[in-house]
Length: 518
Image (tube, rainbow, N blue to C red):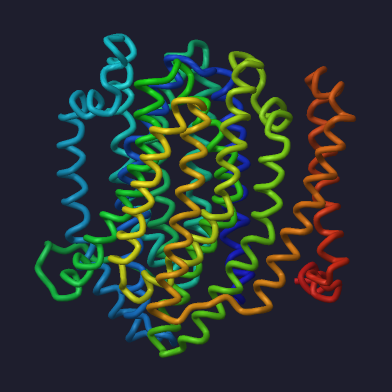
């Protein structure tokens, strides 16, 4: 499979997940709004997600996938596949009991954990009791999604991306069902959502096990025993866990500051803004990282350093082709987007204004997140997990300092802006480090195409900014008029952007016809 096709496969299924996720978010805005129940659920949901990104999709994934891909080799044979499966079985023997023990500890310690995370909501016992209850409902999701990540890593290394990319859709389906069925009250909807999270983890696990068995990837149960390859995995995971933890601490700092020092609803405003900001990141950035890590690992295992650099350049080009205009659009017209998608029921015009301001700030850092997804596999594929930790630590310091400064005048918007600035600082460090240690550089043609994408995005921004003024009445009327106006804005923006690219010969028509034909 070509790099573009592999990224498109993962991105396509991720887009499907994001569509279901959008439906879920619309229903959450309708049934939960931005108050006590929504704040409690988002914090409870943030806790297992913190450890999921720290361990499952963070440290474990970046350690396990390159070692599994190395065992497979550049050219997969029955012998190399069996060797990789033997390694996976030894890893699974340790993974399962560790997850179960950690789950029991966290369930028992949920009260002090939430007290440290929220400060007890300044004595609001009702809200604190609810967040503890919801945290106990959601936390089993961590153990289940970690096992999902284990099977997804094996499938991705075998270039079988579809099943793992579809798994998040299952989470959104369960949450949508919970909201529709139990959405009569805000607290009832929050409880149903929390239970649905863990139930979806069971369904995702069974889905990935079935897909792995169909691909011939059957892990044999075994007792945990020391082995050199498992020790090597642990040596790689340790610094990666620290690095992933620092990144997630960045996100938790925002929640902590918003929960303790800002008005009620601030956590929810940041959540909804980040959800929209994560849409292009999830569709493009995550797909790039998912595909590049096993691909580069296998190229480097075969000694093809030039091929690995070429793949990274192409991945950055391909990802920014769609991410740049998305970021510019989110920063240019955040109000109409938020109003059309969320403003109904308990989500009022006030919530729209506050969320739109946060979205504008978050969007400024969106390209940085995507570039980082293409740069970090260059370290992880070489089993260098220590250098990104140093850079993440420096970014954490920048984020924390900016949080404390910007929250004074910009409130929750300052937290979002600090996150965006820290993301660009992290990318700068990643690029300089990769260039110095492994000779990575941008190809001249890559830089030229990126410059043309910036010009096209600027033209698009001007066009949609002028058009949104003419559509102000439709946005004020709401309902289908508002949906129609946003659809027109999106279509006009896309047309302007791609027309500008074609006129600059960044997208030759021959390439477009071949892509459409494929």
